Length: 215
Length: 215
DNA sequence: TGACAAGGCTAACGCTGTAAGCCATACTGG
DNA sequence: CCAGTATGGCTTACAGCGTTAGCCTTGTCA
Image (tube, rainbow over all chains, first blue to last red; front, side, top):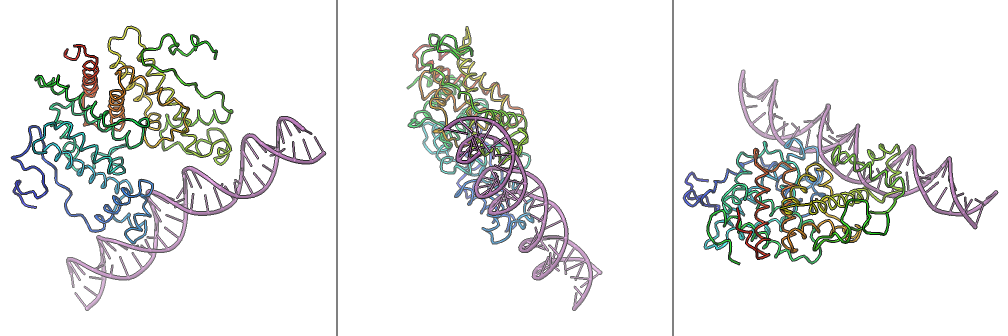
C-alpha cells in the first residue's frame, strides 16, 4: 500500500476521480494475527457454502484443526467472529456498488446500481443476510464503513431521503427474493424495473429536468 | 359467523363494498383443540413481549403448566407452533391493511397504506419479523392467505409489479428501521414520504393523468 | 369390562455457546 | 543462562436447546 491515492491498486477511484457526493473508502483492517484471519476466512467459507446453521464454534474449530474452546483465545464470542465477517461483507458490498456507479459510459446509473446490487446479493445469500438482518453493534465497526457502503445510493439519487428509500426498496426486494416470498411465477425483473422507474422519476423531478416523462 | 356476506361482524368490507381489484379474505382457521389454541396464544404473547430468544418449547410449556415434551402431543415441532403464529400475524396484517385502504374520505390511499403498515409493524416488531423473515413453508398456509394479505398493495397501485415494488419498499423500510440500520438522526418520515412520492408518480403516470407532476 | 385414544410424565440424547483451569512452548529481561 | 510471563493449545464441564422413547393415568365407547 502506497500513500499516493492514484495507485491504490484495487480498481477503486482515486481522489481525482470521485463522483459528486462520493466518499472515500475507509481502510480495510490492517494485518490481523494469523489465527484470527484464518478463523474469519473459515467462517465466511462455511457460512457461504453451507448456511448459517453450519456456522458453529465446533465446526469452525474443526476447519482450523483445533478445539472449539481454543477459539476463545482469539475471539470474545461467536458474535465477534460474525461481526468480523459482517465487516468483510460490508467492504465487499461497498466495493461492488461503488464500482457500479463508475461504469464507463453508463446511461442509467440508478438501474446499474440496482442490477449490480441484486446480482451480488443473490449470489451471496448467506453472507448478505448475516450482514444486513438483525441488530448490528455499529460502534464496533470501523468508523465510516457503514456510511461509505451506503454512499452509492446517495450518489445516484442526489439526496439522503431518496437514497434511503431506494436502498430500502433494493434491500426489501433482495431479502424477499432470497426467502422466496413472492408469488410463484412472479416476473421480478419487471418488479425491479417498476421500482427503478419510480425512483428515476423522483430524482429526475427533483433535478427539475424533463426526463421524468420519457417512457 | 353467518353466511350473509353483509354481516361478517368483523368490520371488513362486504362483497358489495369491495374496491376494484380487491379480494375477499379467506376464513380464519375454525375452532382448534383447546391446548392448541392455548399454545398458539402463549407463543404469540411470549414472542411479542420478550422476543424470539424467549420463545422456547420449555418456556411455552411453563406458560401452560405442563412439560416441554408434552407439547409434541399437539404440535409436530417448534416450527409448527411458529407457523401457526405466522398465520395469525398474516391475518392481522391483512386485516389492518385492508382496513387502511377503506378509510372513508381518504385522499391518498397509497400513503395511508404505508403509514398504517409502518405503524402496525413497528408496534409488533417480533411478530412481524417472525412472519416475514426467513423461509416460509407456504404450502402449509391456508390457501389464498398470502395473496389476500398482499392484495392491498395491488389495490393502491393498480398493477402487480408496482404492487410488489411498493411492498418491497415498505418491507425494507420496516425491517431496517426495526434493526436500527439507518444512520443516527435519520429523518425517516421524510424517507417514507420520498418513497411514497416515487410510487405515487409511478402509478399516476401509469394511469395517464397529470397528477404525477404536482409537488 | 376391555380396548383404545388422548395427553400428561420422566429420562435421555445430541447439539449449542461458553467458562474454568491445566499445560507446553516461546519470548524476554536480569 | 535462567526465571518469568504471555500465547495458545487442551480437557472437562455446564446450562439450555429441540426432540425422542417409553411409561402411565384418565376418559370414552363397544
